[in-house]
Image (cartoon, rainbow, N blue to C red):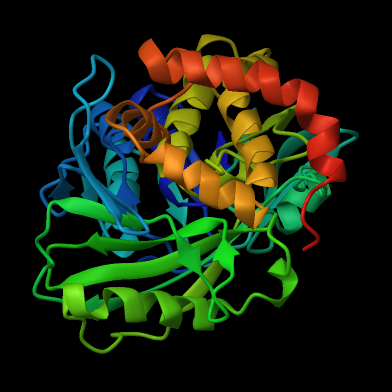
Amino acid sequence: MIVIGAGPAGAAAAIEAARNGVAVTVFDKAPYGRDKVCGDGLTPRAVGALNELHIELEDAHLIDGLRMIAGSKVRQLAWPETSRFPSHGAVWPRRRLDAALIDAATAAGAEVVWSAEATPLLDGDRVIGVEAAGQKWSADLVVVATGAPGMVARLLGADRVVDEPFGLAIRTYATTPRHADRHLEACLTLTDDQGTAVPGYGWMFPAGDGTVNIGVGALSTMKGFKKLNLNKLLETYRETVQESWDLGEYLERPRAWRLPMSTQRRHGPGWVAIGDAAGLVNPMNGEGIDYGLESGMLAVQLFVADPATAPARYDAQISERFDSFLRTGRRFSFLIGHPWILRAGLRVAVGTQATSDITLAVMGNLVDSETPGAAGRVLRIADRALAGADPLLRRTRAVA
């Protein structure tokens, strides 16, 4: 097996493969210890996946819940106790998280080739291996864990769906005396420097090491998205949290990244795409580490069971588990691209304890096809309702 990409999704696949006796080689175009720009927040779902991989969280700052802010309304909620996920999340800067995961893969027996850009080798429409560092490597399965779509995705026809939403985000770090706060903070009423409502949120993710990860993210469904200045948006948000967090100077230049939320394909003969490369990003929060870990493990488990049918069965199981929720999130993002709908929706989202609990489940990636209770019922109802409204949503979308 070959894995392209040594981030959380690729490392999870490599760990699972090596521990199951599968010979696996991981290629990454960056050197060991590279820093991946990210919000660094881990949902309870992500912590559950890390527990399954036997990754210790001693180096991470544990998080008890989420503080949601919508205008003057503040809801501070604990992560729910469930039979599927632990009742805590974490903040773990990606340089350290990614190192912990790939080190575990190496310890399990995976080979990792750094500073080597791997390109899939094709025999007709079948991927039979990769070319990297001037050599050709063969494999029964190539796992694409390359993050946002790029050269590998284009080669395999796995680019994002052009008409679907995507996100942009920017983050940096600052010192704060509140670095040990045990709640993530999300400001849902985000506005630009002109006071225009932005479908997205600003975040403060305390890292427990003297710093906080401060950032903002926005969806492509807003009017004027193409002209949105992320640096200005971050500065506007910083002004709103400066006093309450007593922020110091930025510790590094703010860095931006793209959040893919769809893909044309996530499997084919001899290959599968996992994590961000498969469009597995929650449109409501931009989070995808947990989906990356889960999809990486699932792809390998199916390969171990039956290599010949693994790609098709992987696609079917990912579809069954996540597609309804992610599809609903993308359609909902068309709605909140309209400022008046966004404002009304936020009043509902945090207006009562019941709706806040559902919002918490959505923001925590705790909702999928297996979710019981009110959050699961709301998802299923919303999926059916928005399916019928989809053509109208697309025709009336805000002009980016």
